[in-house]
Image 1: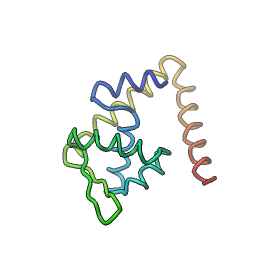
Image 2 (image 1 turned 180 degrees about the vertical axis):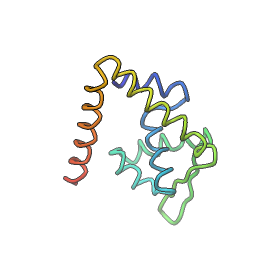
Image 3 (image 1 turned 180 degrees about the horizontal axis):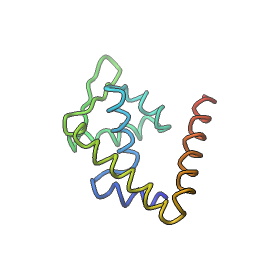
Image 4 (image 1 turned 30 degrees about the horizontal axis):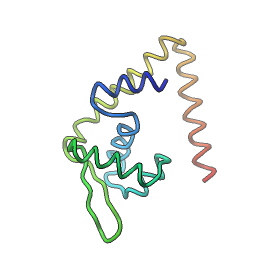
Length: 122
């Protein structure tokens, strides 16, 4: 699964974590780096490192307000959303073709349910 995701997202120059972060930023409009780290279950240093990469690619920008860092998408980041969604769809189709679409749908539902349960336990 990871290999499929790496392959699909490498075509647009992202990792799956970077793509997920961009999707979250698009959904939230703006987000502190610590909040983004919590949502992605990543350490602050990891968030800083990949946000720095996304800033260099001009997909997002960082504003410092006191000690807090607020991350927002640039127009380029907003424009990339359709490509990111297309990558997620391609990932789903590739693994579903290998395991069957019914199993692919079951797997997707299971992963969403597990993710929800893990979030509830925080």
